[in-house]
Image 1 (spheres, rainbow, N blue to C red):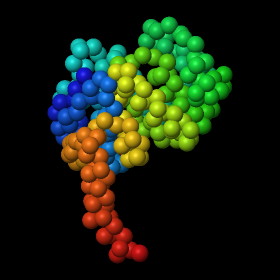
Image 2 (cartoon, rainbow, N blue to C red; image 1 turned 60 degrees about the vertical axis):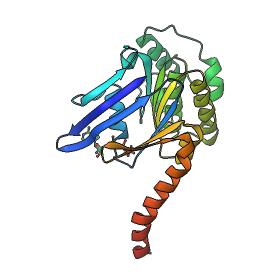
Image 3 (tube, rainbow, N blue to C red; image 1 turned 180 degrees about the vertical axis):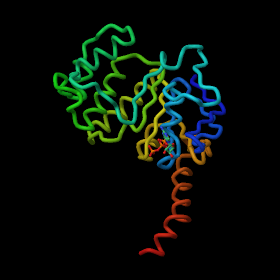
Length: 230
Ligand SMILES: Nc1ncnc2c1ncn2[C@@H]1O[C@H](COP(=O)(O)OP(=O)(O)OP(=O)(O)O)[C@@H](O)[C@H]1O
């Protein structure tokens, strides 16, 4: 299980995370929602060890380093210039000391031009390539920052099916999304990050309440303001 306990992170005087507790169990899809700037990406980068200077505990309870057991899909995947899609995939595998496998099967699904330079891909193709690099490896956990963003309709549908299958095979998946429908269709639980903490945690049976809660707060705060403007 991946475990985050009492996580605090500040950028200068700005306290972004103020005691976040979160767990990611194997065979579970855990959705993370929160407003723009709530700290979702910060939480993920702390969890993955890309951010320094945080307080609190971040660990895989199996005693394995998180980066070893876990694959990360960053919000904006980065590719080195003059590396083809295929070379990028090979690089990802070799960097982890894994044998280079045949990408044909997975790429029949994603249909990427693997022999073109990855830094010349469109935004959606870049996201697909970064996903492909995770799918060809066998991670215990996946952390996906906005995985549906930029994907075309077919890839969106495909990704939902892939995530459910991985979950059923035991992978633990933490993902952020602003598309509530994508989360409620796939996730087993959803946490809401607000004011630096997990304000509420919803089990699948309570997802209807989550939508209603968000709608209620929107009606109360923003739609009231809109009434005054239009
Ligand atoms: N390197 C940084 N230096 C200073 N402030 C930062 C840095 N990274 C993030 N922040 C701030 O931390 C806060 C949380 O940012 P973060 O990217 O984690 O939010 P988010 O929930 O992922 O937002 P979004 O939904 O827009 O992607 C924001 O106020 C942001 O400006």
